[in-house]
Image 1: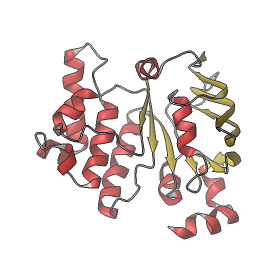
Image 2: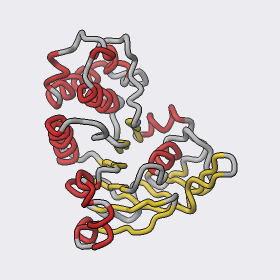
Image 3: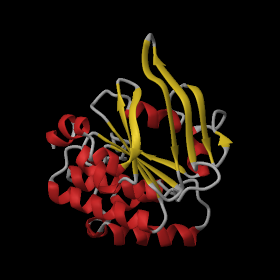
Image 4: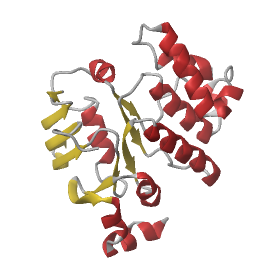
Length: 240
């Protein structure tokens, strides 16, 4: 997976909310085709990091994608570049149908045949969505809404899919559906940046991980190093 340069690189990233220093010099590099997990407690800065990559918040430092500095890119341009963010809040259109929400994910695309092919891909990936094409998003269960949020992100044709807490509040049977989808997408070559408080889920998938605590990367490395780390096992794995 490693190449001559990282696929996505974050260098000395700082984010402030007023006087609060939310990210304190975060640096990460993500290789093409891998799943990179960022774990840590609620409030550690995981969402802030993803918001910075999507250019939803002001930041100091450098974010490069494919060697290109993204500082001047708008959120729309970042999506068109191939970095697509599925937020923790899901941000669905509540009164739109499943099908309409999915089409909203393709609003910046102009190849109708490719959009149609991706629609069918999403319906194959999440059969429950196929069964509910005309159902309004607000009437769906939390798990179904999470599937729809991921499906809508996929409709933007991502090269890197950023997932923020995709298992939050979901029943185990739905988590298995999300699990299967992530494995399928990654097997097809999609790079995934996974921010998760559920460390067990992240460890199940990630090639490499970073532990983010109070805005600082405290540990990073291959997944097996996290599996063997006593602090990770006691502080994070034991709570799931």
